[in-house]
Length: 403
Image (cartoon, rainbow, N blue to C red; front, side):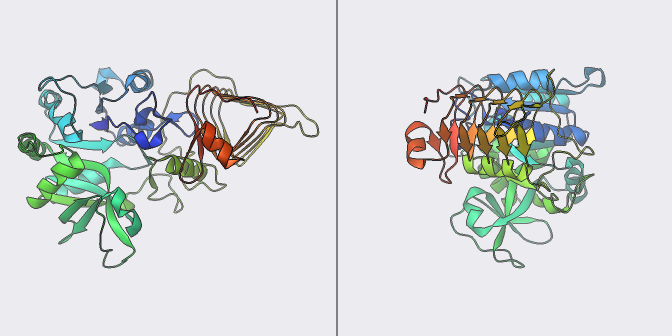
């Protein structure tokens, strides 16, 4: 079960008309492609995606991109909020599962993987499931080490004997570091393996608690920790075919504009921190029927070129220069334009002589000739969304005034 109902408010304007898991990423992917690729590569091919917020583009993407072979009983399907338990929408991630218990009843699984839909990583879930089965735990929580100053962004695990979770705190303001490294804490990745009997029991208990937030991380896991049936899985021990020491254990929550931008810069590094080109554990998606990328014009100041960048199919670099950027399908960069340290999504047109620096430009935007973005912070703040880190974000089809 993939939880894909989040609003993603901190990614606005990219989530103005789409759910966070549907946000384009890395050129031609969507955020949800990463978790689905991990599950499918790992052999788990009966997948439901629980949706709620502005889910249309997510529904379309999943239905068109992920039609697995029904001949073998495989499927990836979206399940919207259906008000099965009364006239109300999902009130939390645990409630989303509770309102869809009919799916579990129909499939009768012995174990259930409940994964988040909007993180960037590679993971072989089989290794986590194997540990879960061997331990006899009711739930296993995937965890990784994060700096103490980021503890308020995670559910923090404190371990007892072995891998047993002795305490679970959701986004605590004060924490103590690990015994072997006081600068780090153990944070939840939002990926869980449940024994079905345990999950059904705790969901029914939580549903009767009117004071509960009905959240998997904030409500369900603490109950199971108190029961002594919760264990941690160390994500750094997960071994992916084709991985390198540089990208081993890579995981990013791209829930803010700055994190979204920084993770893209990881992709375009000469030796990428996250390597999209690992064909032994591919990130799968549907690219569509597009012509190859094209670099045209040759002359002083008019040479189409891209340096330390990803350029997708259908893009035309027509006399412009691209540096350390991700250029999505069907983007055109006109003569004399400069794009640096930026994420340019599908069907964007960068006009002649325009300058775009440290920006995220969503689909269908036209940057008029000569316009400068990411050059004058005060002017950018008047026209666009600017992150705490100074990244300029322009929403889908947003009008960019002429320079």
